[in-house]
Image (cartoon, rainbow, N blue to C red; front, side, top):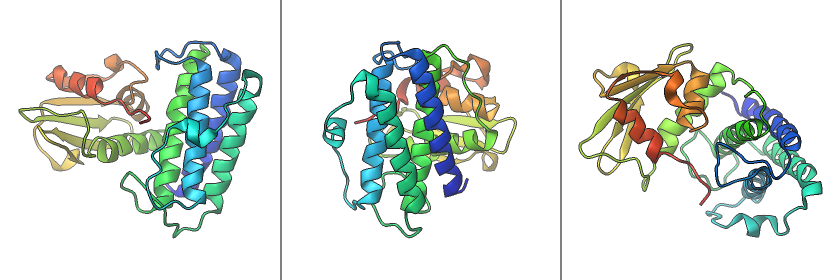
Length: 252
């Protein structure tokens, strides 16, 4: 996907998140984030938007490892929550849209450029939490276009879980193949004692477990937003269970 497409998703997903959060109310439970109510979900996402904006707009070239309280300063009252969130989305979209293609700033995932990384990361961050807000409001989850869902799966499998220090490890090594059935997308995840390596699944033979399904279903399941029961699983199911148990992307 192009940078401009990711920026458009940030805007549209942010609007849907705000609408769902308003419908749910600030005290509604978030079933996919059991420790949160909607107030905390919106504050989290609004804080992350401001954190990302500060890095890109700075630009900050060193890691900005802070708690969101330091980024936000004063949190909004419930009556101002949705407007505050919308302001943050708007500033992030404007900052990314106006950034130069050769922007130099700190990043934490592999990408063709810093601008590409921040646009992609915030598109998927906002989209996954949009799902949380819709579920909290009891609304149907807005479907994801297959290309965007595939992009999100690729980010998770090739960027997030391959970073040092992750919790996804296995001794002996296990092989998990993830395959989209409605669009090109095929990955082989090698889970080793000290690291994870992901390569194109179509270039490999053999795996301990193969999980397949439409890109949108895989996206939600691998990001722990939908049960994996809707997916086709062949081989040793415990390999997929290991992945789902150990892979939880959190703010730190």
